[in-house]
Amino acid sequence: MANAPQFIIMGAMKCATTTLHEQLNAQPGVFMSEPKEPNFFSDDDQYQKGMDWYLDLFSETSPADICGESSTHYTKLPTYPEALPRLQQHLPDVKLIYVMRHPIERLISQYVHEWSQRIVSKDLSSALKNRPELYQYSSYAMQLRPYLETFGPERVLPVFFERLKQDPRSEFSRVGEFIGCPQPVQWQEDSGHRHVSKERLRDNALRDAIVNAPILSTLRRRLVPQSVRDRIKGLWQMQQRPQLSDSEQAWLEEKLDLDLAELGRWLGLPLSCRTYLEVVSAQSAEWEIDHVPQPATSLRV
Image (cartoon, rainbow, N blue to C red; front, side):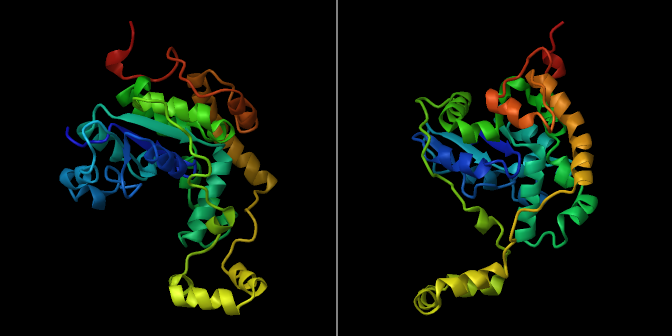
């Protein structure tokens, strides 16, 4: 199919998918979609725009380009159940990249993001009770199983966020080889970096319009001392990263450890919330082919 993406970064949310998207976009011969997250196969309103609209996102590519996009909605079960069958229908040969982070750290980062976007307004404890997707999106084996059973493990690349952060060149090389880059990829230092304080700054349309107006921005810098600006900014900012109580931590570990144990069997790693950081820091994520779910037609007798 002309101009169709050959690969998709499909998640997980808040696991440096934006950084990976930008790093790939900086490589010769790689074309990444704009917008970064079209969410075409997951969101009904996007899908209704039609396949021609989606393919037009890649219309400026050259014949030799490797094309990709990055939509974390594709691995947000049970919120978007249609993403997988639509992908299978329209892009049956696509390669998929799934980035994982410590599941509780990912969950908290999602909460901070949604707080800044005004999706949630209550504290983390209340959000855990009312938004099960916070831990569902961190249930990596649950999210991955249907993709492995549909596309096969050879077309799904597992990546640890912590390894990408610790050894970006090596992990990025894995990604480049997986998507079929004709030449070695080069990691660009400081690409896609965002300061954590910005992530904790809550959206406000009126404030942002005033802050981003060029003339007012110049006057503000000249006339308002930095200390005063920082105090005003603090009114819109989450002052510190939310913390879990001991009981909440234990509850989440009990839920997520079952999922991590299953993922660990597929990767040949002893994964749990307590062991995760130590284990993933030691090696890259690679499937144990004899243990990972596979399409029924490809199972060996």
